[in-house]
Image (cartoon, rainbow, N blue to C red; front, side, top):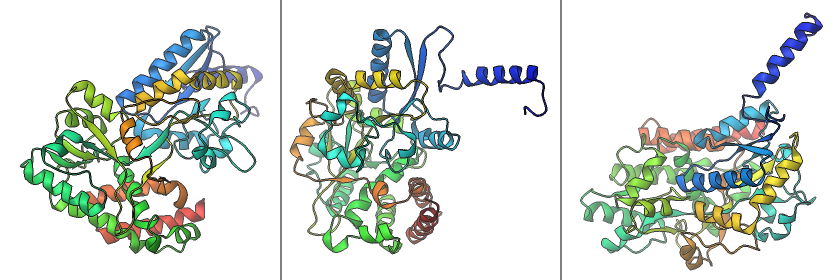
Length: 422
């Protein structure tokens, strides 16, 4: 551009660019009022989670009047937005690595190893958030123990024991349908937000393909030799549930935000929706009781698993123009009282050893404390990009445009293609 315009025009163009950047939400310059603005992108999507982080952002800004936090909670669009920003090397000052602190975002994050909070990091997260050189990739707001959420009142009403195997789970769903005369949805899936379908496949892939000694294919998945026909039983199980009327009829259009009201009205027995669903539903109906359980075992003789690792984190963009202000915000978030607020708001365990936060599901985490936490399947065994494939093939399966065998075939083809790109 400089070759063709006068210096005057360059100055004008530069002024326009700067003005445009100031409206993006990312903030590498001080705002007009002299304050520093930090952009913060997080994956939090449930109401309780949003309330918790919004309250802490407001508290931080009150205590630090020279810093603004531009909070962005794009929900299901988060990954697409961050991919665009990575491609442009124009990342938010602070952002959630949501399980991909090293594999996807590693080259974009600043090292936090010198920060005070690191000494209190839960050792179970060391391999996830630290590398062999000691680099610390992100601050964990909490950690994940994902399984299946259930309505304890519904199970008690119909005499259903909390299932421990997939067969028991199917029986429980059938019992709900029969005894409620169809008034209660046995397994509710908000498939209008397709990532929730990927969540189901991702959680159940671990007991199908990893945890049972005689059916463990981690090595094959890592070296690229995995036979994807072994994935088919997951799709078959979901189709069986749909054909038996065990899923909500609006499975392809139902939205995540509907979960709270429906489960509060005792219209849902089981769902893979997690986060703040329990306290959010109890706020609407104090009589409701929401529980959580580990993922059921699939193979005979195997045991249940929690699926987990990092849940929500805050990483610092390595090229932020405001590293000290960014660290100041993380130091604020790492205060025990603020870690507790996040744990309570997200209904997820805290990630620091100097905090012992109680949350809505604490009794269940204690009940199942002997159950091993397995890492998310896609984060360990699949190349970047496969989450979208799981989501899309799952939607097409439930729409009847793909058979279970075609789902596995597509998964295998995309797995091979994406491995070559990564």
